[in-house]
Length: 323
Image 1 (cartoon, rainbow, N blue to C red):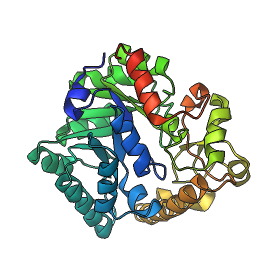
Image 2 (cartoon, rainbow, N blue to C red):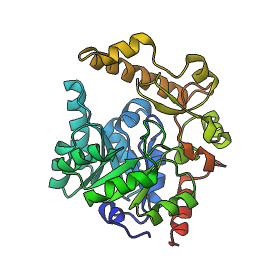
Image 3 (cartoon, rainbow, N blue to C red):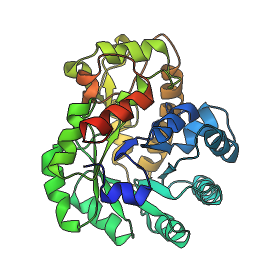
């Protein structure tokens, strides 16, 4: 089960992705997963604005820790011209620095696919249902990352099983994203027919991740019932750990926010405001011992200890029949 279309696309040994996480994708975590045989994904905003690296310098920092393949996450939803120019610049730098695997999210991936393909790279796109997959395929992607209802952050609405069946007709490799926190879950997703598994929450609870120890301990202690969906971060439901702060601020957008989000023009202003607020809130919370907003998926039920990232990758490989 370790030789899949994904491992051939990514040139890795284990069909396991450390999902891109704002703000938790620090260079040491990305490098540790790749060095162990999986694929660490760089989240540019985390690298540049949270961990204090210029993007090129951050990539080179990761390269000083591992020579094995890494990937990059490109959030390509249409936003301001300045943001899109910055993202295009980041993609160009990544290609110059040897990155050949890209994960795109939210927008039309055509321009990333064209750039990656010209350099011999591949692009996988985040999807939650078939209609978004159809647009991604039309945009030239090479694979799909199926975000199911058990994922952290912006989760989908389908089960892992139903989503895979919905995406099979597109004929591309599909990666399971959501709800996997242990080796049994990893092997089960491969047996279902997924080409790889993306884990996010599991890799926060590692020594290599620089999130606060309080955040990590909360993940270890949490069960599925401790995950809630909050509209107070981005305006649409985000999966979070239930904390005293989350309970105080509530889970629903207020009346004014909902009114702004319904407007044809005002929704863009409101989303920009939410994005700025989310960037600050999530960054502060991840590194503050006093809990604010801690993103997590339902995989917390399978997380029982803080374990080195490399050990997680190797254990998954062994469970799937590797060494």
